Length: 348
Image 1: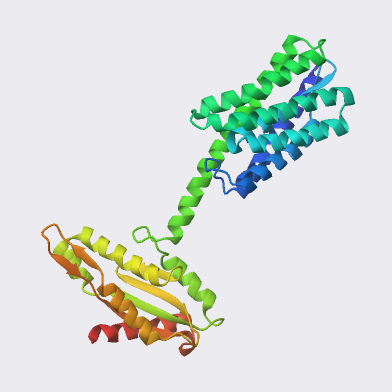
Image 2 (image 1 turned 135 degrees about the vertical axis):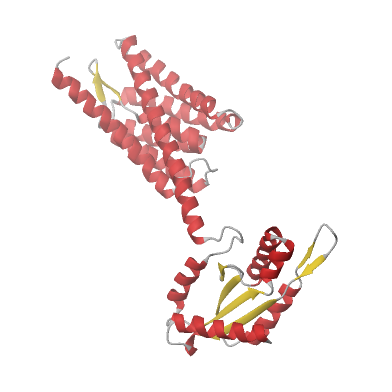
């Protein structure tokens, strides 16, 4: 083999890997990089269709071996789709490859391979449920074997002039492609989990599990001047004393229970601003009565009970200040007015 032929084969090999990785990167973006989560039916169908489409692209980057276009990574889509998304996805990919073979391949060979692809797809459907209790490596190995062995055997039967050396090269090439893509997808999944964690922690208060001050500020800016709404500010009365007398564990528990009650009444519009200070952004409409809402909030918080190991029971109360958005010229002014009302309520 001359140098030019070697680099041509190498370029085709890299093209195969590039198409394969790009396909699963697209899937990763669509799935928010969560390949280790149970796939929905839409994901199974999408992965099967994408696998079939990109398999067609890979047919145009096949490496010639002993006069035949034999080396490409289209089988990897069957293996990885079966491994990550189950037999349904692999079966859909097999259907697409079958269709492409019949359209663009030698008809006699295409028909035989089409039958094999359909058989593999059905086999992946049948065997899928039995693999769930196996380890990841065993699952991948079984799926790989159930794909490569039938196709390699059929290749030898159809083209007996192809040497065993080429068949081994094909198996090794597919194996390397499978594991290269597997580890890339694993890295993408890890990266996706990290991104999801950082995104979640930037928006959600770690202790109370409701949205934090950053999300409050963003929502306030989004609403102000566009919609009428009420800003309610609340804090837990005597919170410092609770921490000092009963300890920070009880103080943290009080904040969690406080936030739970707010979320029960006003889901998706309550926020922890910091310490024992909370906020609620409530749309203003004709049926909404802020005084009644304030009384209901206080009644709900007063219903919180914490029993200590020594049988002592702690009760809680809250102070509330509120203001409607059209009473202020800016978000900052609205916040100051609500805070002033909160201070006045604490003095009563």
